[in-house]
Length: 75
Image (cartoon, rainbow, N blue to C red; front, side, top):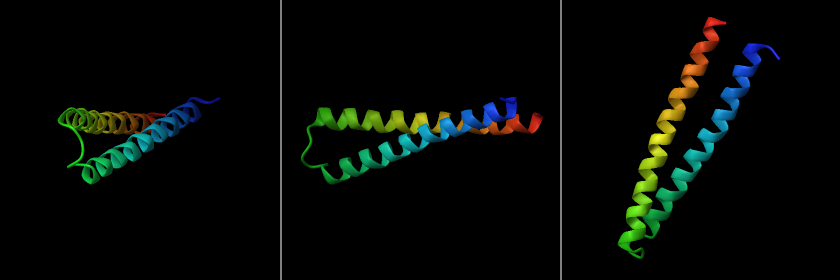
């Protein structure tokens, strides 16, 4: 397999994980907004930390994808 094809496959794999993170974030925010008054403070804090972790993961994964795309220009 050529190096360019390998990088493209890695980009596609990272995009799958990016989509999973985004869908999970949307689901978690939706759950938080619909159950805000029924959940305990402990669950709220854990959910809020999960939202922060997901946002950071999305940011760094997106940064990694852009780096891989930019590395294709050099090939």
